[in-house]
Length: 132
Image (cartoon, rainbow, N blue to C red; front, side, top):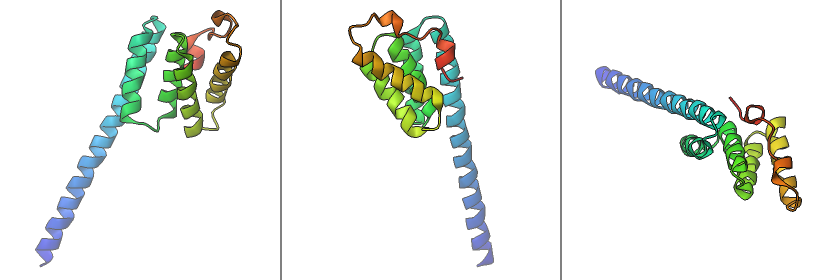
């Protein structure tokens, strides 16, 4: 009987280690997608950056940084409604981040000023708004 419990305990530890390994792998993949997307954005490849941030969000839907970065990508392509949605989600996930709130407010302001030249509301630098 004692041997049976030992086997169950060993099996439980083994399963737990596998799950921890899988979870850390997902975190690594999210970070890899984020870093790749930042490099693509810096090169002006916004569609590629958006695709990578979408992948990061699909792996980790509660990653506020990925949502914020996705908003930056959408905004760079003029997809303001999508940008607002992504920024809103980032601020919901991390309401203490001043950068997410600034991006969200600025993008909503852009919608209110729909007659204003879009270059006036574009970010000066993607590095300022994209979370590394």
